[in-house]
Length: 470
Image 1 (cartoon, helix red, strand yellow):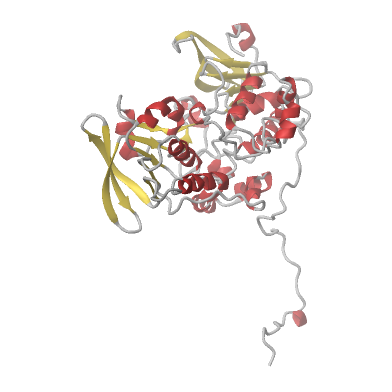
Image 2: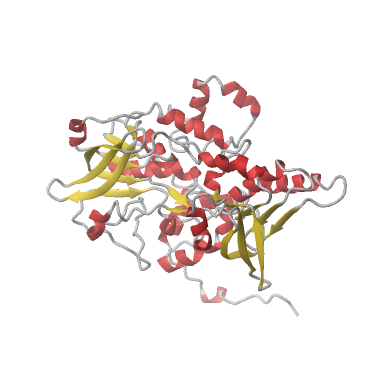
């Protein structure tokens, strides 16, 4: 939904105001719509409409989670906002049944979310939230926003009052420092993979293309470009800082790291332990799915059919030290191989940075709450088990976060499979009831030892049996 909201409606205190309408706050809005007795909830988004990673909706690219990881199903399978109900409304349920696709295409997930966003009440696109403050007299949060016109220019100012705020502002593309000046300069052929489809035609026409980054996006971009280039004249290079083009951990027990059980375990760990653990878990969420790796190899192998090797270079363990322009149309990358300690230069006509995303900063928006915020030893926001920012006790309202809590809740924070569950946790906390009963156990793995004291062992049973009998 779009359009303005009468200020008299906003002057009435809301139960909940959401900032940002990506998949996670859209999940929250959909489940909030089903809370018995109703919930006064409003969501603001500065973009004019819902779009989910539009630059990476490559034909055939699929989600890395099953379709059951939609906005609502894992918390409320009977919700009218489920993916299956979306298919039913579009008379596509039987074709989907016969397609036997457990992992749907990314473009279809985007279309499903847009279907929800266009029908769900309380969503306001074209509204940019500027600040969130606590009003101690009214015991409410003040949310100031700017309504934008179709050109993205300021059209009107407004304010909403609410008992609770949920931040779901998402992430933004990350560009490594050595490449930032080139990526920001107009006309330089250095783009982030988030904008890949908008530049695909020019990238396909480029003489030589370099893809940097070994995650799923890097693999999909490399494969898409490879398929479009003639055999023997591919002229494409794929570089990565990681030691290998490694598969994502996708075993059934490995996937239990994306369960509420593991989230609770991780949150209860000491802060230093969490900090040491996160970098070691990169393959749980930064690897490449096995099907894409196989497709890359199959495409490369197909090109050897008539002899010779494809003109494609795939090199892991490489970092970009510096980068600069050559003449007006090319880029020179200064490379270092970490294990060898060797250096070289690569001249290329275009660079695609599949270098991931970082949490979008909200310091400016939350500047009015800064005196109330509590931080950990690294200066990051403290977040409790219910996804609430830890605030001074004088603040009686709550600020919740979505996909900004990996340092406190683990690798599942950005995972779509935990979206509905996290939304249900937040709504249960907001209402003080349990509109969405949640399972007590979700994994076969017990991630920690029971903290209870072990029973004492009688002295005569403490003797150790030797491993080898003489």
